[in-house]
Amino acid sequence: MPYNKRLPLLMLLDSIIVFSAIFFGYFLLDPIMKTYTMPSLWVSSITLLISHHLFATIYRMYQNAWEYASIRELLAIVKAVTFSMLTTAIIQLIVFQHANIRVLAITWMMHVILIGGSRFSWRVYRDRFITPNPDKKRTLIVGAGSAGTMVVRQLLKNTETDLYPIAFVDDDPTKTKLQMYGVEVKGMIQDIPKLVVKLKVENIVIAIPSLTKSELNRIYEESAKTKAKTKIMPSIEDLVSGKISVNQFRDVQVEDLLGREPVELDITSISGEITGKTVLVTGAGGSIGSEICRQLCKFYPKQLLLLGHGENSIYTIDMELRKFYQDEIELIPLIADVQDQGRIFEIMGKYLPDVVYHAAAHKHVPLMEYNPIEAVKNNIFGTKNVAEAAHTFGVASFVMVSTDKAVNPPNIMGATKRFAEMIVQNLAKESTTKFVAVRFGNVLGSRGSVIPLFKKQIAAGGPVTVTHPEMTRYFMTIPEASRLVLQAGALARGGEVFVLNMGDPVKIVDLARNLITLSGYTEEEIGIEFSGIRPGEKLFEELLNDNEVQKKQVFPKIFIGKAEPIDKQKLYKVMETLLDLDSEEIKEIIIEIANTKISEKSKLSKAGA
Image (tube, rainbow, N blue to C red; front, side, top):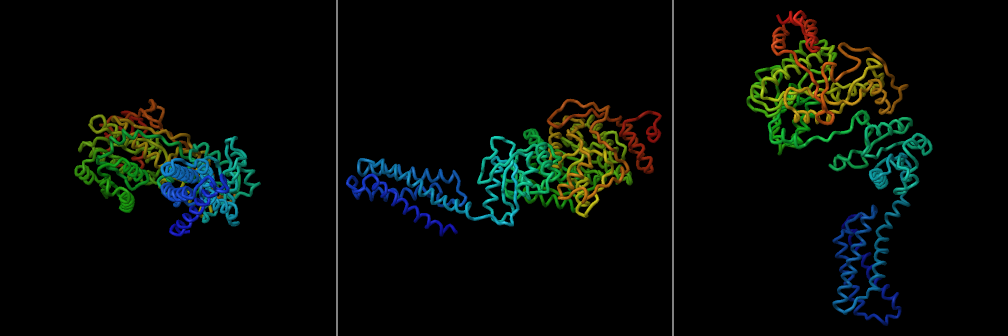
């Protein structure tokens, strides 16, 4: 009912209750009305009526949606009734020199019962007699805490949702057999498979925002034993920010199962590096580069330079950031190729950035095996151009985004990234700029990740192709990797190779199986085929080799690797000859450098002679 129609009806109902209650109170104590005078009765009634409507307005009793009434609304009624009684008692004392306390006590009790009853009756009727749509899906709620209770409440009141809660499961034994909004806690998480069968559950909703990744995996493993579809409630951040409502569930994603617990960043140190400064990000349109830009904007730099070679990707991230930060940050999209030394020096000299995040690179391992010259031009000479420009124009900090594939690389991509690390490390020895590199493994959902490929294969009906049954990789979410890159930049003193703790490696075949299940299929429906290891691939990735002794942890999930570069003169001497060699010679020399197997008699020495 519209507010303008509901207000007069509620006020009329309250007026009838107020008048009848106080008359009943007087009558109950003195049926023949010998003790009380009519003036006292009428003054008390009118005072009570006026004060009740006043306090009812103050406590917003006429604005509440009473079909969803709870303890909070009951407390509002008690407060309004109590203060109206106190006001009436004060008026009685002033006018008649005494207060009819017993009458007011009886009236107070009747007001709470009758007004409260009138408000809660609609909720009782709604919950009791408005039956759920039989077409709604029977839903099991995992978690009977405050979040789970909120989910049930929202599902019960939302007529548009297609989910209907029929039971909870919770590992707290004290909650077993308890009911919340008429929905009973039927068992624990280990009971999910049998409850799904017994209660004919069609959907499972995970409603525990504080879940650790291991706990989420455990719940998912139990849910995966059933044919019910598993969903998860929105994150607390999305709920608080208003991006999404509590009953807008999403499917469990593989990122949920592979991600790790978030690290609290040192906001003060990062803010000191970024806030109010000019920051340049190369490769700003890429998966990592664009996320670095998003994370940087949270610290409000004065200028953010978005540099990239692809106009569409730079346009996309520029438009996205302008939507939220146009008035606070000067966003400058720059189309440039890091291989173009003149253009890079021009940009660096014009804008004089305080901090540079170098994320531009060719990262696809098999593709670079076929195009080693392009890998050298972009990953080595491109890094050299940006780093030397940063040194020339006095940039305070330079952070290069590297990869775990730079460790003992058998492939051209990893080798060129290790070569780039050594360029940065050598510059750090002679420059006032703090040059550092940050290594991490695969990121979930990036353009080069296997996950988008697997999803396309599943959508096409399969099979999902995995290179080898023992193939393993480290995984990290894009936001986590980007946040830790910013933190590593704030920790930089110059010359470090920071290594991000990637957690435990994951078998790619297990990742494929999880994706198939999450997509609602079985391995019988979507098969897995092994296609063989591709050119340049390793079965197992490493974050440090045997010679790169890991030092102490400098921040949660951030270590410093003792990765020593070869001599700068040798490094630059080889670079002078690289582009004059053929692809196979380039591969051999770059991989030899990356593995630091340097001797006077080596092919490297001959090539540089």
